Length: 57
Image (tube, rainbow, N blue to C red):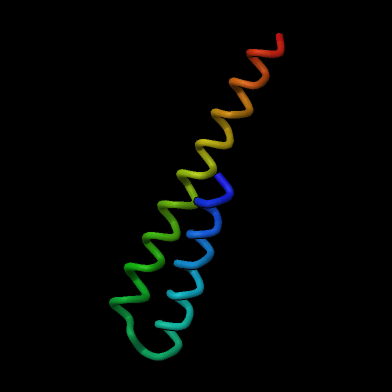
């Protein structure tokens, strides 16, 4: 999951740089990629925590 968050941050940095340089289309795509990876990592974290709690009980 750490890898997903790494790529989400990379996409976010690319979006910020592209937005600063005026590449709106690239920035939009990078933000969408970062958003998808962030939510995917968050969902996987919640599933992992719930499964860990179920296993422990």
